[in-house]
Length: 448
Image 1: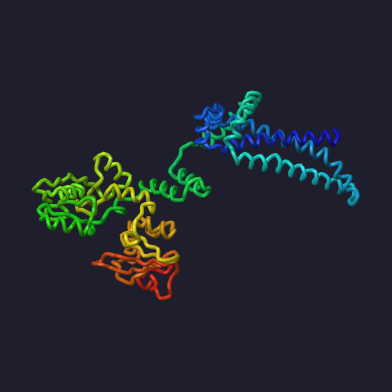
Image 2: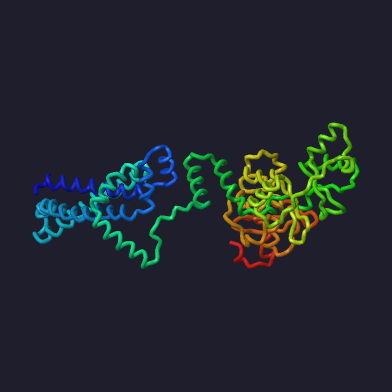
């Protein structure tokens, strides 16, 4: 065989190997959601690709038969065609024995390099760029080859299936899509510019509803504005002016005996129409939806939907009122910073690049997100920033107490009747800040 003929054979083998590499990577990398979209648009080949993905054994068997056969032939042809020419070159400097060995190694390395670049790396990178489009083009020729090599395909497929059974390994592709998969896709879309960063954050917030407890969003007991059943109209008016909310619990004697709630819209309508603000004179008292404090926000949404309400009283296991929550509270959690609020109303105020002023009742998920922290220690023991400080200090914090963790210093700035109002968070530990060891008696090893 002449050099020209050998080179033509090598080119043909490289093209064949590239075809099988492209067929392999395009099927493996094809996204089922994209294939389903193509099928819905009328591309029948996409349906065939999805069926092969469900049972890819025959497909990959043909691919491996082709790749291995081409690799063997390529080695035989390449070594036999290139070695004589390399030997003639090396005979100028080396002994016959040494030049023969060097020629074999040179031809071997050359063939390996050519096949690696043109038959493996290039087609696989090409296949990864647009796998679905290439997969639908490859599926027809590959099905012809599956039929042509059916006896060999059957033999190798049965042998492989038997090996999977012996090892008790799943032989079928798992097509289950989890919330983590969806979040990973949205993050990739945000990085690629397909999704806006805020849109991606809204999607992440939706999935977070299932893990966030109602207590992380509700208005806590000490901040609830409520009425007594027999409050005078002047008291009701003064309370509305001082604490304007969309709804107010109405109680009998104390806050733990809730009779219902009054909608602020009903009160405004009566004021505008000149009617008296009194529960004894027609002011509507709505039945309150009561929910336990262990529900997730997803479950709260379900409760609102079933009861056709947007306001609920939150109670603990002792039937004591611990807070109230509205549909708007839940939706604000989903929308995040898309909901416009004034700085003074925000629970987290960024002062500069390295400091934040944070309300003590801020949900710990929001604190972690604002500070770009993956997870704070003892995460399952608290739900708010105040709870984090109590757990770390092992006592009720007082003003100037501080905790240092992961390069951040959390310093209590204001305490009102044992309730932590404001916490100053700074990146990096200031020299004047007391160490956690002296404040809480904990081991230095507990604070990286």
